[in-house]
Length: 213
Image (cartoon, rainbow, N blue to C red; front, side, top):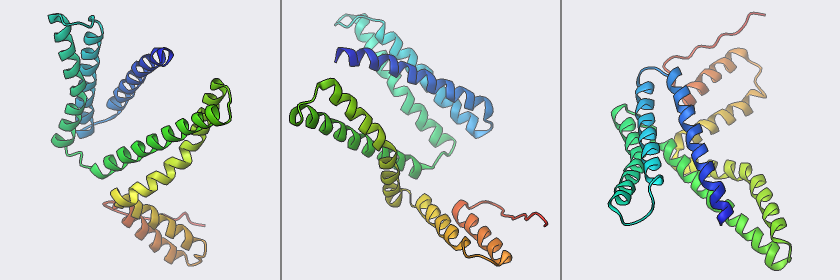
């Protein structure tokens, strides 16, 4: 656990810094409402980072300074969901189906992979009597190899229930790909393509350009 703690918190800080840097780059390229949304998100991230830094810099104890630092750290943590809420409500970021489906999918994936990892470690150490280091390495590789196929299957199942628009769009595109194999009439294919794009993406305008010759 000591080694895990020594690795976890630096990696957590690194991940936070990379996330903020990515949002800064996105902010520089964005405009309009997207820029305002990112401004709120960056503000919440900066407040959270500052609050956690203040809390981490004070000794743990029952002193007034320690208690105030703990409160500041707690408020800093709340700044991120608060800023996200403002960005969603104030600037009409209502793609909530996608948020819900992603949250559920990755929560399920995390639970499944943790269960697989723990099960493989117990199997290797308690049943097969392998060395603990070898068991941990093998379980880590197995969990990493399972991530992509598990993510695809879980995401598809979650989208079917909680993000039906994307699931229906994927099914529409897959059906069009199947029909395209047998399509010989160019005008029919063009009309079918325009209809699929309209149904899957719902754009304001659709046009198909075919190169002469």
